[in-house]
Image (cartoon, rainbow, N blue to C red; front, side):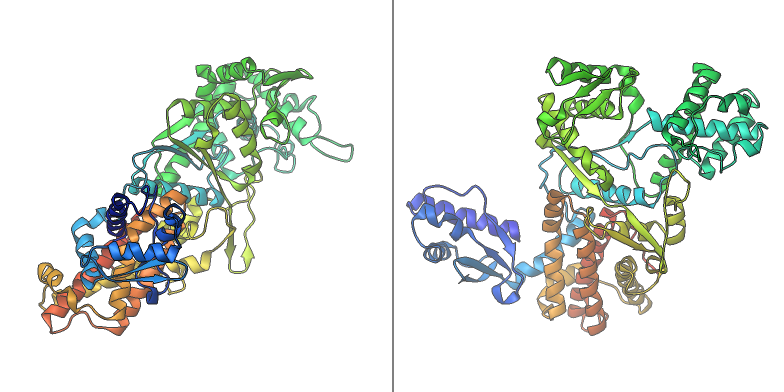
Amino acid sequence: MKQALITLLESTLSSLVEAGTLSAMPEKINIERTRDKAHGDFASNIAMVLCKQAGMKPRDLATIIVDALPEGGIITKVEIAGPGFINFTLTSDAQHAVIGEVLQQAEQYGHCNAGEGQKVQIEFVSANPTGPLHVGHGRGAAYGSSLANLMRTAGYNVHCEYYVNDAGRQMDILAASVWLRYLNLAGEPTDDITTDAFPNNGYQGDYVWDIAASLHREFGDRFRHPITTVMADTFPDEGEDGGDKERHVDDIINKAKSLLGDSDYRVMFDAGATEITDNIRRDLGEFGVEFDEWFSERSLADSGAIDSAIAKLQDAGHLYEKNGAIWFKTTDLGDEKDRVVVRDNGLKTYFASDIAYHMQKFERGYDSVIDVWGSDHHGYIARVRAALKAMSLDDSKLQVLLVQFAILYRGKEKLKMSTRSGQFVTLRELRNEVGNDAARFFYVMRKCEQHMDFDLELAKSKSNENPVYYVQYAHARICRVFSQLTDQGLSWDQAHGLSTLDVLVEEHETDLMTLLARYPELVGSSARAREPHHIAYYLRDLATVFNAYYHAHKFIVEDAKQRDARLSLITAVRQVLRNGLQLLGVNAPDTM
Protein backbone atom coordinates (compact mmCIF):
# COMPACT_ATOMS: atom_id res chain seq x y z
CA MET A 1 0.00 0.00 0.00
CA LYS A 2 2.81 2.37 0.84
CA GLN A 3 4.38 1.96 -2.57
CA ALA A 4 0.98 2.31 -4.24
CA LEU A 5 0.48 5.66 -2.52
CA ILE A 6 3.97 6.81 -3.52
CA THR A 7 3.20 5.90 -7.13
CA LEU A 8 -0.10 7.79 -6.91
CA LEU A 9 1.63 10.91 -5.55
CA GLU A 10 4.36 10.68 -8.19
CA SER A 11 1.72 10.73 -10.92
CA THR A 12 -0.11 13.64 -9.27
CA LEU A 13 3.04 15.71 -8.77
CA SER A 14 4.11 15.02 -12.35
CA SER A 15 0.85 16.55 -13.56
CA LEU A 16 1.50 19.62 -11.38
CA VAL A 17 4.97 19.98 -12.89
CA GLU A 18 3.44 19.87 -16.39
CA ALA A 19 0.91 22.50 -15.31
CA GLY A 20 3.70 24.76 -14.03
CA THR A 21 2.62 24.66 -10.38
CA LEU A 22 5.86 22.90 -9.51
CA SER A 23 9.21 23.35 -11.23
CA ALA A 24 10.60 19.86 -10.61
CA MET A 25 9.80 16.49 -9.11
CA PRO A 26 11.10 15.80 -5.57
CA GLU A 27 14.01 13.42 -5.12
CA LYS A 28 12.01 11.35 -2.64
CA ILE A 29 8.40 11.08 -1.51
CA ASN A 30 7.94 10.18 2.14
CA ILE A 31 4.90 8.16 3.15
CA GLU A 32 4.57 6.96 6.74
CA ARG A 33 1.94 5.03 8.62
CA THR A 34 0.02 7.18 11.08
CA ARG A 35 0.25 6.42 14.79
CA ASP A 36 -3.36 7.41 15.41
CA LYS A 37 -6.15 5.82 13.38
CA ALA A 38 -8.08 9.08 13.68
CA HIS A 39 -5.53 10.55 11.26
CA GLY A 40 -6.07 7.90 8.62
CA ASP A 41 -3.80 5.05 7.56
CA PHE A 42 -0.88 6.94 5.98
CA ALA A 43 0.48 10.49 5.98
CA SER A 44 2.86 12.47 3.76
CA ASN A 45 4.80 15.68 4.39
CA ILE A 46 5.29 16.30 0.66
CA ALA A 47 3.54 19.70 0.74
CA MET A 48 5.98 20.96 3.37
CA VAL A 49 8.93 19.63 1.37
CA LEU A 50 7.85 21.37 -1.85
CA CYS A 51 6.27 24.57 -0.51
CA LYS A 52 9.42 26.66 -0.98
CA GLN A 53 9.77 25.49 -4.57
CA ALA A 54 6.10 26.27 -5.22
CA GLY A 55 6.30 29.64 -3.45
CA MET A 56 3.24 29.08 -1.28
CA LYS A 57 2.22 28.00 2.19
CA PRO A 58 2.33 24.23 2.88
CA ARG A 59 -1.41 23.96 3.53
CA ASP A 60 -2.19 25.83 0.31
CA LEU A 61 0.05 23.50 -1.67
CA ALA A 62 -1.43 20.50 0.13
CA THR A 63 -4.89 21.62 -1.01
CA ILE A 64 -3.71 21.79 -4.63
CA ILE A 65 -2.15 18.31 -4.39
CA VAL A 66 -5.28 16.83 -2.83
CA ASP A 67 -7.50 18.42 -5.50
CA ALA A 68 -5.26 16.93 -8.21
CA LEU A 69 -5.50 13.37 -6.86
CA PRO A 70 -7.62 11.06 -9.01
CA GLU A 71 -10.91 9.94 -7.48
CA GLY A 72 -11.57 6.34 -6.46
CA GLY A 73 -8.83 3.76 -6.41
CA ILE A 74 -7.40 2.66 -3.08
CA ILE A 75 -8.21 5.89 -1.20
CA THR A 76 -11.54 6.51 0.46
CA LYS A 77 -10.69 9.79 2.22
CA VAL A 78 -7.94 12.44 2.13
CA GLU A 79 -7.52 15.14 4.79
CA ILE A 80 -5.06 17.97 5.41
CA ALA A 81 -3.79 18.20 8.97
CA GLY A 82 -1.54 20.44 11.03
CA PRO A 83 0.95 22.57 9.10
CA GLY A 84 0.29 20.69 5.86
CA PHE A 85 0.35 16.91 6.34
CA ILE A 86 -1.77 14.96 3.86
CA ASN A 87 -3.54 12.03 5.55
CA PHE A 88 -4.84 9.11 3.53
CA THR A 89 -7.53 6.62 4.57
CA LEU A 90 -7.62 3.45 2.50
CA THR A 91 -10.69 1.66 1.22
CA SER A 92 -11.73 -1.62 2.83
CA ASP A 93 -10.81 -3.47 -0.35
CA ALA A 94 -7.29 -2.02 -0.22
CA GLN A 95 -6.91 -3.12 3.40
CA HIS A 96 -8.22 -6.61 2.65
CA ALA A 97 -5.87 -7.05 -0.32
CA VAL A 98 -2.94 -7.83 1.97
CA ILE A 99 -4.43 -11.21 2.88
CA GLY A 100 -4.39 -12.33 -0.74
CA GLU A 101 -0.85 -11.01 -1.16
CA VAL A 102 0.41 -12.99 1.82
CA LEU A 103 -1.30 -16.19 0.73
CA GLN A 104 -0.06 -15.85 -2.83
CA GLN A 105 3.54 -14.94 -1.98
CA ALA A 106 3.78 -17.28 1.03
CA GLU A 107 7.42 -17.53 2.20
CA GLN A 108 8.36 -14.76 -0.24
CA TYR A 109 6.07 -12.27 1.48
CA GLY A 110 8.19 -9.53 2.97
CA HIS A 111 10.92 -9.78 0.37
CA CYS A 112 11.70 -6.38 -1.11
CA ASN A 113 14.34 -4.53 -3.09
CA ALA A 114 15.44 -1.99 -0.50
CA GLY A 115 19.04 -3.12 -0.95
CA GLU A 116 18.92 -2.87 -4.75
CA GLY A 117 21.38 -5.76 -5.08
CA GLN A 118 24.21 -3.97 -3.26
CA LYS A 119 27.15 -6.24 -2.45
CA VAL A 120 27.68 -6.31 1.31
CA GLN A 121 30.20 -8.23 3.38
CA ILE A 122 29.30 -8.92 7.01
CA GLU A 123 32.07 -10.17 9.28
CA PHE A 124 30.89 -11.31 12.69
CA VAL A 125 31.79 -13.45 15.71
CA SER A 126 35.48 -13.87 14.65
CA ALA A 127 36.37 -15.03 18.16
CA ASN A 128 39.99 -16.04 18.69
CA PRO A 129 40.29 -19.85 18.48
CA THR A 130 41.75 -19.96 21.97
CA GLY A 131 38.70 -21.45 23.66
CA PRO A 132 35.05 -22.42 23.17
CA LEU A 133 32.46 -19.83 22.26
CA HIS A 134 30.83 -18.37 25.35
CA VAL A 135 27.47 -16.65 25.80
CA GLY A 136 28.98 -13.27 24.92
CA HIS A 137 29.99 -14.57 21.49
CA GLY A 138 26.49 -15.99 21.12
CA ARG A 139 24.91 -12.56 20.98
CA GLY A 140 27.21 -11.47 18.17
CA ALA A 141 26.49 -14.71 16.34
CA ALA A 142 22.70 -14.38 16.63
CA TYR A 143 22.80 -10.69 15.70
CA GLY A 144 25.11 -11.14 12.70
CA SER A 145 23.18 -14.12 11.37
CA SER A 146 19.80 -12.39 11.77
CA LEU A 147 21.15 -9.24 10.14
CA ALA A 148 22.40 -11.26 7.17
CA ASN A 149 19.02 -13.00 6.79
CA LEU A 150 17.23 -9.67 7.05
CA MET A 151 19.43 -7.92 4.50
CA ARG A 152 19.17 -10.79 2.01
CA THR A 153 15.38 -10.64 2.34
CA ALA A 154 15.56 -6.89 1.71
CA GLY A 155 17.44 -7.36 -1.57
CA TYR A 156 21.09 -7.08 -0.55
CA ASN A 157 23.73 -9.45 -1.92
CA VAL A 158 25.30 -10.58 1.35
CA HIS A 159 28.57 -12.42 1.96
CA CYS A 160 29.09 -13.66 5.53
CA GLU A 161 32.62 -14.11 6.81
CA TYR A 162 34.41 -15.36 9.93
CA TYR A 163 37.93 -14.02 10.43
CA VAL A 164 39.96 -16.80 12.04
CA ASN A 165 42.72 -15.32 14.20
CA ASP A 166 44.99 -18.33 13.69
CA ALA A 167 48.23 -16.36 14.13
CA GLY A 168 49.79 -14.07 16.70
CA ARG A 169 50.62 -13.96 20.38
CA GLN A 170 47.31 -15.24 21.80
CA MET A 171 47.64 -18.38 19.71
CA ASP A 172 51.21 -18.77 20.98
CA ILE A 173 49.91 -18.51 24.55
CA LEU A 174 47.39 -21.25 23.75
CA ALA A 175 50.13 -23.46 22.29
CA ALA A 176 52.30 -22.94 25.38
CA SER A 177 49.32 -23.72 27.64
CA VAL A 178 48.63 -26.95 25.77
CA TRP A 179 52.30 -27.92 25.98
CA LEU A 180 52.45 -27.42 29.75
CA ARG A 181 49.35 -29.58 30.21
CA TYR A 182 50.89 -32.17 27.87
CA LEU A 183 54.06 -32.22 29.99
CA ASN A 184 51.95 -32.89 33.07
CA LEU A 185 50.24 -35.81 31.32
CA ALA A 186 53.64 -37.08 30.13
CA GLY A 187 54.75 -37.48 33.71
CA GLU A 188 56.52 -34.27 34.57
CA PRO A 189 56.07 -33.46 38.31
CA THR A 190 52.53 -32.24 38.85
CA ASP A 191 53.48 -30.03 41.76
CA ASP A 192 55.44 -27.84 39.34
CA ILE A 193 52.65 -27.15 36.88
CA THR A 194 49.46 -27.42 38.86
CA THR A 195 46.82 -24.78 38.36
CA ASP A 196 48.42 -22.72 41.14
CA ALA A 197 51.78 -22.65 39.35
CA PHE A 198 50.34 -22.47 35.85
CA PRO A 199 51.00 -19.08 34.19
CA ASN A 200 48.38 -16.54 35.13
CA ASN A 201 48.21 -15.53 31.50
CA GLY A 202 47.84 -19.11 30.27
CA TYR A 203 44.56 -20.67 29.13
CA GLN A 204 43.30 -22.82 31.98
CA GLY A 205 40.03 -24.33 30.79
CA ASP A 206 39.34 -28.07 30.72
CA TYR A 207 39.44 -27.92 26.94
CA VAL A 208 43.22 -27.29 27.15
CA TRP A 209 43.63 -30.57 29.05
CA ASP A 210 41.52 -32.33 26.39
CA ILE A 211 43.74 -31.08 23.55
CA ALA A 212 46.86 -32.03 25.49
CA ALA A 213 45.47 -35.51 26.16
CA SER A 214 44.79 -36.03 22.45
CA LEU A 215 48.39 -35.08 21.66
CA HIS A 216 49.75 -37.42 24.31
CA ARG A 217 47.65 -40.32 23.04
CA GLU A 218 48.85 -39.74 19.49
CA PHE A 219 52.52 -38.85 20.05
CA GLY A 220 53.42 -40.33 23.41
CA ASP A 221 56.47 -38.61 24.94
CA ARG A 222 57.72 -37.06 21.69
CA PHE A 223 57.34 -33.49 22.99
CA ARG A 224 58.46 -34.20 26.58
CA HIS A 225 61.17 -32.09 28.19
CA PRO A 226 62.08 -31.84 31.88
CA ILE A 227 59.93 -29.28 33.60
CA THR A 228 63.03 -27.88 35.29
CA THR A 229 64.50 -27.17 31.84
CA VAL A 230 61.28 -25.56 30.71
CA MET A 231 61.06 -23.27 33.73
CA ALA A 232 64.77 -22.47 33.98
CA ASP A 233 65.62 -18.80 33.47
CA THR A 234 62.00 -17.78 32.95
CA PHE A 235 61.05 -14.44 34.46
CA PRO A 236 58.87 -14.94 37.55
CA ASP A 237 55.12 -14.83 37.07
CA GLU A 238 54.35 -13.12 40.36
CA GLY A 239 55.34 -13.32 44.03
CA GLU A 240 56.77 -11.45 46.94
CA ASP A 241 59.89 -10.56 44.96
CA GLY A 242 57.82 -9.18 42.11
CA GLY A 243 57.12 -10.59 38.68
CA ASP A 244 55.67 -9.92 35.29
CA LYS A 245 52.99 -12.29 34.02
CA GLU A 246 53.29 -11.03 30.44
CA ARG A 247 57.04 -11.53 30.36
CA HIS A 248 56.73 -14.88 32.11
CA VAL A 249 54.35 -16.35 29.54
CA ASP A 250 56.45 -14.93 26.68
CA ASP A 251 59.49 -16.69 28.15
CA ILE A 252 57.59 -19.99 28.20
CA ILE A 253 56.54 -19.46 24.57
CA ASN A 254 60.16 -18.90 23.60
CA LYS A 255 61.19 -22.03 25.53
CA ALA A 256 58.56 -24.04 23.68
CA LYS A 257 59.80 -22.78 20.33
CA SER A 258 63.47 -23.41 21.12
CA LEU A 259 63.06 -26.83 22.78
CA LEU A 260 60.53 -28.21 20.34
CA GLY A 261 61.89 -26.69 17.15
CA ASP A 262 59.79 -25.28 14.32
CA SER A 263 58.21 -28.55 13.22
CA ASP A 264 57.13 -29.89 16.61
CA TYR A 265 56.06 -26.46 17.83
CA ARG A 266 53.83 -26.19 14.76
CA VAL A 267 52.22 -29.52 15.72
CA MET A 268 51.47 -28.12 19.18
CA PHE A 269 50.23 -24.81 17.75
CA ASP A 270 48.02 -26.39 15.09
CA ALA A 271 46.53 -28.92 17.50
CA GLY A 272 45.04 -26.13 19.58
CA ALA A 273 44.01 -23.92 16.67
CA THR A 274 42.44 -26.73 14.63
CA GLU A 275 40.56 -28.38 17.49
CA ILE A 276 39.08 -25.14 18.78
CA THR A 277 38.23 -23.77 15.32
CA ASP A 278 36.47 -27.03 14.47
CA ASN A 279 34.50 -26.81 17.71
CA ILE A 280 33.56 -23.21 16.97
CA ARG A 281 32.44 -24.15 13.47
CA ARG A 282 30.34 -27.01 14.86
CA ASP A 283 28.82 -24.87 17.62
CA LEU A 284 27.80 -22.14 15.20
CA GLY A 285 26.41 -24.61 12.68
CA GLU A 286 24.24 -26.20 15.37
CA PHE A 287 23.14 -22.68 16.35
CA GLY A 288 21.96 -22.07 12.78
CA VAL A 289 24.81 -19.68 11.98
CA GLU A 290 26.53 -20.29 8.66
CA PHE A 291 29.36 -18.46 6.92
CA ASP A 292 30.19 -18.18 3.23
CA GLU A 293 33.87 -18.02 4.10
CA TRP A 294 36.22 -18.74 7.01
CA PHE A 295 39.11 -16.37 6.34
CA SER A 296 42.49 -17.31 7.83
CA GLU A 297 44.65 -14.58 9.37
CA ARG A 298 47.67 -16.76 8.69
CA SER A 299 46.89 -16.64 4.96
CA LEU A 300 47.52 -12.88 5.01
CA ALA A 301 51.13 -13.45 6.01
CA ASP A 302 51.57 -16.43 3.69
CA SER A 303 50.23 -14.47 0.70
CA GLY A 304 52.34 -11.39 1.43
CA ALA A 305 49.24 -9.26 2.00
CA ILE A 306 50.55 -7.86 5.29
CA ASP A 307 53.86 -6.84 3.73
CA SER A 308 51.98 -5.28 0.83
CA ALA A 309 49.77 -3.23 3.16
CA ILE A 310 52.77 -2.00 5.17
CA ALA A 311 54.55 -1.09 1.94
CA LYS A 312 51.54 0.99 0.84
CA LEU A 313 51.55 2.87 4.12
CA GLN A 314 55.31 3.39 3.83
CA ASP A 315 55.06 4.68 0.27
CA ALA A 316 52.32 7.11 1.35
CA GLY A 317 54.56 8.49 4.10
CA HIS A 318 52.46 7.32 7.05
CA LEU A 319 55.10 5.19 8.84
CA TYR A 320 58.08 6.08 11.00
CA GLU A 321 60.64 4.23 13.12
CA LYS A 322 60.97 4.65 16.87
CA ASN A 323 62.89 2.50 19.37
CA GLY A 324 63.41 -0.17 16.74
CA ALA A 325 59.69 -0.53 15.98
CA ILE A 326 57.70 0.67 12.96
CA TRP A 327 54.86 3.02 13.86
CA PHE A 328 51.79 4.10 11.89
CA LYS A 329 51.02 7.79 12.46
CA THR A 330 47.30 7.27 12.91
CA THR A 331 46.94 10.51 14.90
CA ASP A 332 47.14 12.38 11.58
CA LEU A 333 43.99 10.52 10.54
CA GLY A 334 41.74 10.79 13.57
CA ASP A 335 43.12 8.24 16.04
CA GLU A 336 43.98 9.16 19.63
CA LYS A 337 47.57 7.85 19.44
CA ASP A 338 49.97 6.30 16.95
CA ARG A 339 50.07 2.52 16.58
CA VAL A 340 52.86 -0.04 16.16
CA VAL A 341 52.64 -2.22 13.05
CA VAL A 342 56.03 -3.95 13.36
CA ARG A 343 57.53 -4.64 16.81
CA ASP A 344 61.18 -4.11 17.63
CA ASN A 345 61.68 -7.89 17.29
CA GLY A 346 60.46 -7.78 13.69
CA LEU A 347 57.08 -9.38 14.35
CA LYS A 348 53.98 -7.81 12.82
CA THR A 349 51.22 -6.75 15.18
CA TYR A 350 47.55 -7.75 15.14
CA PHE A 351 46.84 -4.29 13.81
CA ALA A 352 49.08 -4.93 10.80
CA SER A 353 47.03 -8.04 10.03
CA ASP A 354 43.77 -6.10 10.41
CA ILE A 355 45.03 -3.43 8.02
CA ALA A 356 45.84 -6.07 5.42
CA TYR A 357 42.51 -7.84 5.97
CA HIS A 358 40.47 -4.67 5.47
CA MET A 359 42.54 -3.70 2.44
CA GLN A 360 41.75 -7.13 1.01
CA LYS A 361 38.04 -6.70 1.81
CA PHE A 362 37.88 -3.45 -0.13
CA GLU A 363 39.79 -4.96 -3.05
CA ARG A 364 36.96 -7.50 -3.43
CA GLY A 365 34.65 -4.72 -4.56
CA TYR A 366 31.93 -4.65 -1.91
CA ASP A 367 29.57 -1.68 -1.84
CA SER A 368 29.56 -1.87 1.94
CA VAL A 369 31.66 -3.65 4.56
CA ILE A 370 30.06 -4.34 7.95
CA ASP A 371 32.18 -5.36 10.94
CA VAL A 372 30.27 -6.71 13.94
CA TRP A 373 32.56 -6.38 16.96
CA GLY A 374 32.24 -6.71 20.69
CA SER A 375 31.76 -3.41 22.50
CA ASP A 376 35.24 -3.75 24.03
CA HIS A 377 36.64 -3.05 20.53
CA HIS A 378 35.21 0.48 20.42
CA GLY A 379 38.68 2.02 20.52
CA TYR A 380 39.70 0.01 17.48
CA ILE A 381 37.36 1.80 15.08
CA ALA A 382 39.41 4.99 14.65
CA ARG A 383 42.63 3.15 13.83
CA VAL A 384 40.99 0.94 11.21
CA ARG A 385 39.39 3.98 9.57
CA ALA A 386 42.78 5.70 9.68
CA ALA A 387 44.31 2.77 7.82
CA LEU A 388 41.65 2.90 5.10
CA LYS A 389 42.14 6.64 4.65
CA ALA A 390 45.91 6.21 4.52
CA MET A 391 45.53 3.74 1.64
CA SER A 392 43.13 6.13 -0.17
CA LEU A 393 40.16 3.80 0.39
CA ASP A 394 36.66 5.11 1.01
CA ASP A 395 36.20 4.55 4.75
CA SER A 396 32.54 5.60 4.50
CA LYS A 397 31.91 2.12 3.08
CA LEU A 398 32.92 0.63 6.43
CA GLN A 399 30.26 0.33 9.10
CA VAL A 400 31.26 -0.97 12.51
CA LEU A 401 28.43 -2.30 14.68
CA LEU A 402 29.25 -2.89 18.33
CA VAL A 403 27.50 -5.66 20.25
CA GLN A 404 27.32 -5.50 24.02
CA PHE A 405 28.11 -8.80 25.70
CA ALA A 406 25.17 -10.53 27.32
CA ILE A 407 25.19 -10.77 31.12
CA LEU A 408 23.85 -14.11 32.20
CA TYR A 409 21.68 -14.63 35.27
CA ARG A 410 20.40 -17.80 36.90
CA GLY A 411 17.80 -16.56 39.31
CA LYS A 412 19.43 -13.64 41.08
CA GLU A 413 22.92 -15.02 40.56
CA LYS A 414 25.08 -13.23 38.04
CA LEU A 415 27.35 -15.75 36.31
CA LYS A 416 31.00 -14.71 35.98
CA MET A 417 32.95 -15.26 32.80
CA SER A 418 36.67 -15.27 32.00
CA THR A 419 37.99 -17.10 28.97
CA ARG A 420 41.58 -17.06 30.20
CA SER A 421 40.77 -18.55 33.61
CA GLY A 422 38.30 -21.02 32.13
CA GLN A 423 35.37 -19.67 34.17
CA PHE A 424 32.57 -19.09 31.69
CA VAL A 425 29.31 -20.51 30.35
CA THR A 426 29.79 -21.79 26.83
CA LEU A 427 27.35 -21.14 24.04
CA ARG A 428 26.85 -24.90 23.83
CA GLU A 429 25.87 -25.05 27.50
CA LEU A 430 23.43 -22.20 27.00
CA ARG A 431 21.84 -23.89 23.99
CA ASN A 432 21.54 -27.16 25.87
CA GLU A 433 19.80 -25.41 28.76
CA VAL A 434 17.36 -23.05 27.02
CA GLY A 435 17.37 -24.26 23.40
CA ASN A 436 18.42 -22.59 20.17
CA ASP A 437 15.11 -20.79 19.65
CA ALA A 438 15.04 -19.04 23.00
CA ALA A 439 18.74 -18.17 22.79
CA ARG A 440 18.48 -16.62 19.34
CA PHE A 441 15.27 -14.71 20.04
CA PHE A 442 16.51 -13.34 23.36
CA TYR A 443 19.82 -12.28 21.82
CA VAL A 444 18.16 -10.09 19.17
CA MET A 445 15.40 -8.54 21.28
CA ARG A 446 17.45 -5.42 21.89
CA LYS A 447 19.53 -3.10 19.74
CA CYS A 448 22.98 -4.58 19.45
CA GLU A 449 24.68 -1.74 21.32
CA GLN A 450 22.27 -1.90 24.26
CA HIS A 451 23.13 -3.65 27.52
CA MET A 452 21.47 -7.05 27.84
CA ASP A 453 20.61 -9.21 30.85
CA PHE A 454 19.87 -12.79 29.79
CA ASP A 455 17.43 -14.39 32.23
CA LEU A 456 17.85 -18.17 31.99
CA GLU A 457 14.73 -18.93 34.01
CA LEU A 458 12.56 -16.68 31.81
CA ALA A 459 14.02 -18.16 28.63
CA LYS A 460 13.04 -21.66 29.78
CA SER A 461 9.57 -20.75 31.02
CA LYS A 462 6.39 -21.67 29.18
CA SER A 463 4.49 -18.49 29.88
CA ASN A 464 3.29 -15.34 28.17
CA GLU A 465 6.18 -13.48 29.80
CA ASN A 466 8.61 -15.50 27.67
CA PRO A 467 8.54 -13.63 24.33
CA VAL A 468 9.73 -16.46 22.10
CA TYR A 469 7.27 -18.90 23.67
CA TYR A 470 4.49 -16.34 23.26
CA VAL A 471 5.18 -15.85 19.55
CA GLN A 472 5.69 -19.54 18.81
CA TYR A 473 2.53 -20.42 20.70
CA ALA A 474 0.52 -18.03 18.52
CA HIS A 475 1.79 -19.91 15.45
CA ALA A 476 1.00 -23.29 17.01
CA ARG A 477 -2.43 -22.06 18.10
CA ILE A 478 -3.34 -21.24 14.48
CA CYS A 479 -2.20 -24.71 13.43
CA ARG A 480 -4.43 -26.18 16.13
CA VAL A 481 -7.43 -24.28 14.74
CA PHE A 482 -6.99 -26.11 11.45
CA SER A 483 -6.62 -29.45 13.25
CA GLN A 484 -9.92 -28.74 15.00
CA LEU A 485 -11.46 -27.84 11.63
CA THR A 486 -10.49 -31.26 10.27
CA ASP A 487 -11.73 -33.01 13.43
CA GLN A 488 -15.13 -31.43 12.85
CA GLY A 489 -15.25 -32.72 9.28
CA LEU A 490 -14.95 -29.23 7.80
CA SER A 491 -12.50 -27.66 5.37
CA TRP A 492 -11.25 -24.22 4.43
CA ASP A 493 -12.10 -22.89 0.98
CA GLN A 494 -9.37 -20.32 0.33
CA ALA A 495 -10.87 -18.98 -2.89
CA HIS A 496 -14.20 -18.50 -1.20
CA GLY A 497 -12.54 -16.87 1.80
CA LEU A 498 -10.70 -14.35 -0.39
CA SER A 499 -13.95 -13.45 -2.12
CA THR A 500 -15.76 -12.74 1.15
CA LEU A 501 -13.19 -10.61 2.99
CA ASP A 502 -15.70 -7.78 3.25
CA VAL A 503 -17.14 -9.55 6.33
CA LEU A 504 -13.89 -8.80 8.22
CA VAL A 505 -15.00 -5.66 10.00
CA GLU A 506 -14.04 -6.33 13.62
CA GLU A 507 -11.38 -4.10 15.17
CA HIS A 508 -9.07 -7.06 15.80
CA GLU A 509 -9.37 -8.02 12.13
CA THR A 510 -8.57 -4.53 10.93
CA ASP A 511 -5.61 -4.34 13.29
CA LEU A 512 -4.25 -7.66 12.04
CA MET A 513 -4.52 -6.59 8.41
CA THR A 514 -2.73 -3.34 9.19
CA LEU A 515 0.08 -5.26 10.88
CA LEU A 516 0.37 -7.71 7.98
CA ALA A 517 0.69 -4.84 5.53
CA ARG A 518 3.46 -3.28 7.64
CA TYR A 519 5.74 -6.32 7.42
CA PRO A 520 7.43 -5.71 4.03
CA GLU A 521 8.01 -2.05 4.93
CA LEU A 522 9.52 -3.12 8.24
CA VAL A 523 11.87 -5.58 6.55
CA GLY A 524 13.21 -2.83 4.31
CA SER A 525 13.59 -0.18 7.00
CA SER A 526 15.11 -2.61 9.52
CA ALA A 527 17.65 -3.83 6.96
CA ARG A 528 18.67 -0.27 6.10
CA ALA A 529 19.03 0.54 9.82
CA ARG A 530 20.84 -2.79 10.51
CA GLU A 531 18.34 -3.44 13.32
CA PRO A 532 16.83 -6.95 13.33
CA HIS A 533 15.41 -6.37 16.81
CA HIS A 534 12.50 -4.56 15.13
CA ILE A 535 11.41 -7.91 13.68
CA ALA A 536 11.31 -9.43 17.18
CA TYR A 537 9.19 -6.53 18.43
CA TYR A 538 6.88 -6.82 15.43
CA LEU A 539 6.34 -10.55 15.93
CA ARG A 540 5.36 -10.02 19.52
CA ASP A 541 2.93 -7.27 18.51
CA LEU A 542 1.42 -9.52 15.84
CA ALA A 543 1.11 -12.40 18.32
CA THR A 544 -0.51 -10.07 20.87
CA VAL A 545 -3.20 -8.86 18.47
CA PHE A 546 -3.83 -12.38 17.20
CA ASN A 547 -4.19 -13.81 20.70
CA ALA A 548 -6.66 -11.06 21.57
CA TYR A 549 -8.58 -11.91 18.38
CA TYR A 550 -8.49 -15.63 19.29
CA HIS A 551 -10.04 -15.01 22.70
CA ALA A 552 -12.66 -12.54 21.40
CA HIS A 553 -13.99 -14.41 18.38
CA LYS A 554 -14.56 -17.92 17.05
CA PHE A 555 -13.04 -18.94 13.73
CA ILE A 556 -14.90 -22.19 13.11
CA VAL A 557 -18.43 -20.82 12.80
CA GLU A 558 -21.48 -22.04 10.91
CA ASP A 559 -21.51 -19.13 8.46
CA ALA A 560 -19.20 -20.34 5.65
CA LYS A 561 -18.50 -16.81 4.43
CA GLN A 562 -17.27 -15.64 7.81
CA ARG A 563 -15.51 -18.93 8.53
CA ASP A 564 -13.51 -18.95 5.29
CA ALA A 565 -12.70 -15.24 5.53
CA ARG A 566 -11.43 -15.56 9.11
CA LEU A 567 -9.45 -18.69 8.29
CA SER A 568 -7.88 -16.83 5.36
CA LEU A 569 -6.88 -14.04 7.72
CA ILE A 570 -5.32 -16.26 10.38
CA THR A 571 -3.52 -18.29 7.69
CA ALA A 572 -1.91 -15.06 6.55
CA VAL A 573 -0.98 -14.29 10.17
CA ARG A 574 0.57 -17.74 10.53
CA GLN A 575 2.61 -17.23 7.36
CA VAL A 576 4.01 -13.89 8.49
CA LEU A 577 4.82 -15.24 11.94
CA ARG A 578 6.73 -18.06 10.26
CA ASN A 579 8.52 -15.71 7.87
CA GLY A 580 9.58 -13.37 10.66
CA LEU A 581 10.78 -16.16 12.94
CA GLN A 582 12.79 -17.59 10.06
CA LEU A 583 14.60 -14.25 9.66
CA LEU A 584 15.70 -14.55 13.29
CA GLY A 585 16.75 -18.19 12.91
CA VAL A 586 13.89 -19.39 15.12
CA ASN A 587 11.55 -22.32 14.43
CA ALA A 588 7.80 -21.97 13.98
CA PRO A 589 6.40 -25.15 15.60
CA ASP A 590 3.01 -26.55 14.62
CA THR A 591 2.39 -27.91 18.11
CA MET A 592 3.59 -26.91 21.59
